[in-house]
Image 1 (cartoon, helix red, strand yellow):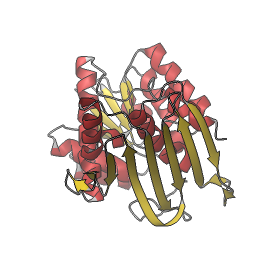
Image 2 (image 1 turned 120 degrees about the vertical axis):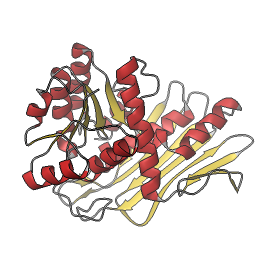
Image 3 (image 1 turned 45 degrees about the horizontal axis):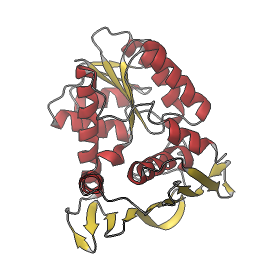
Length: 308
């Protein structure tokens, strides 16, 4: 199977390293800077490189593509991938509006190709083990608390390098947080109250507070911030018999740690590896049960749109 990567930045490098470590060759890469494309291709032993993603997509030997470009290009490039007849795994956010999300969804349906979304939290060991326990022991969450707090007042990403593009707490981290909350709570006929804080700088939303209520009176609460000088990225799930916490990459049950800590970088690498291999397996077999498809992202994207 021929696999291409569009993008040469930090998250593209994570995908590439995970694939190489899993003995999956990368057939081609495209970017917009010649020296960065050349460096990426050399580092990850990529056979073909391009400065235009449309040239990569014209290669008949490429069957599937990972889109890891700046957020504002995710939707348009994903549409291009689908129109070229190839499967796509797109980084979150799949788009920066509900309208452009629907354009990708429409292209996926028309071209009948797998469109998967990088909801990487669902592939982390701690979250997977939490979900397994809830399902196998028939534990119904009464309350789910999700926090994603960080400092993004300057345009600096998770690598510490200044970005050429602006991140979105709503469409990026909001998509991750609402997806994990819905996945764990599994509400029926949910009612959602989602609020955004004051506009910051170049008209960016920096604070989100949300509440999801199931019709059987179970709740999820979410708090996201790009103003926090004390970073937090954790999940708490309360059932009638147990309290679970996912923090520092580990799962804790009633105060007892049951999975090991994982440094942030290793946590990311482990989850991305599972996610990318699941995508490639889905392309190969046609079984999409282990990937998060663009169809299943509808509810999250629709909820985020209500915040505007």
